[in-house]
Amino acid sequence: MNPKILLVEDDADFGMILKQYLELSDFEVIWFQNPEDVLEIIETQFDFQIGILDVMMPNIDGFSLAKHLLKKQANFPILFLTAKNQKIDRLTGLKLGADDYISKPCDPEELVLRIQNILKRSTFTAIQQTEIKIGSYLLNTEKLQLEHPKGKHKLTLKENELLLFLLNHNHQLLKREVILENLWENTDYFSGRSLDVFISRLRKYFADDDSIKIMSIRGVGFELDFPE
Image (tube, rainbow, N blue to C red; front, top):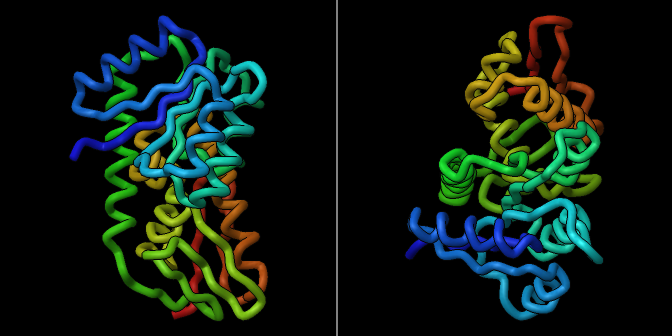
């Protein structure tokens, strides 16, 4: 079965072009021009593998729509389309838990590659059914959940992927470029800012155990210390 994409793009011409190209690339595409229609359908149907959302839309912008989608499925992969290169757009999306972003007008081939990479990570996470003890925490990679006696944190796919990568390199000094090349496949400024956002979020999740440390080494990367 072909992966099913939720495409939300209010520009009729651009939306049609994307839909046709993605269908030629063996995706099933459900396209909405009006984000309010999406809110109606997800109440009874949520069988998409990934969402591609335009940021600038009338009535409901892409960020607001993403919040609704993530309430329905906390680990739902989202890729934002933005016509602007402003940092505020990209950082807002990353803080929401977005997996990627791409600026319009975008290269359709690049878009397909990014979608494929996100879906690969999603599939990899979905097939794992292990529980990993991290200090006083328990990471459930099947549920994408970090559990602690004081509470639980639902992880996004990217958070889970980053945490597993860090665990696999415990007690090591990891260069920023190594993490970016492996998980973001890009070492540009915005990818670096994305990494910082996710590192900051993981630190907050582990705030209830002082034995867990993700230390920043200025100009180099991160030194990791997870109890074993």
